Length: 138
Image: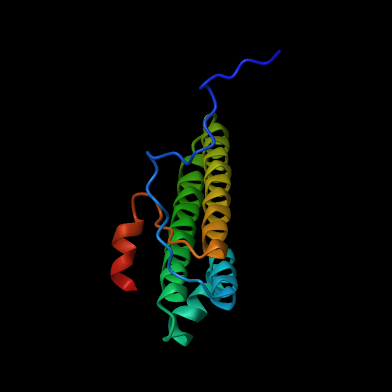
């Protein structure tokens, strides 16, 4: 009735590298998850927690993401104020920068959720494009 095919493979995909495990302690994983959730809590942990390298790694990535989000938000705000003062087309510039900011907020939310999921599993997470530069602050 059913034919067996090689279409589905239950074995792990060999093309993906294995995740880099940085912690096996559930307490540290939960602390890392909270650091990935909030930039302010991560900033606190950067200065307060000197014992766990896993917590510090996630905290630095979270603070970096938050700082980039704040900087890009300020840039959108300033540009929308400057270009929004132009008669007739200023409103459309304002709308354009507002849409750009909302898309950026969505991207930051997706990155934070990915960071939290990886932190809860005890896996390392490096932000795309800027994560390797942020590793210098660990």
